[in-house]
Amino acid sequence: MHDKLYDFKFVSNLSIKKENTLLGCLNISIIYHIFKSKPDYILLFGWNNLIPLFVLFTKIFLRSKLVIRGESDNIGSKHDLKYFFKKKYLSFLFKFFDNFTYSYEKNKKYFLERGVS
Image (cartoon, rainbow, N blue to C red):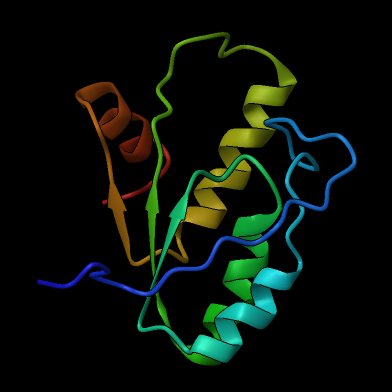
């Protein structure tokens, strides 16, 4: 039996303020590691930072399949400007992913409301 079923690499977070925000996770070296390994699939956990954009950049050149896993749902305010722009951004971003995984029904609904089919 194999100890590793797939290759993986952890990269360092270079952000000064490490938190769950757009600039809270900066791993620019991920581009290098993806180009070096030329994966068939890239599994991305979450989208609340710039990493999905870096990964998307590599997809364009390598034609890797992108799979995203998230646990968001629609709990919270839906009437503020931040919600509006985030929903638009995610609807755009999600068009580039090849597959989605969800962990519960509200999470599935979250994806569907952003154009995922």
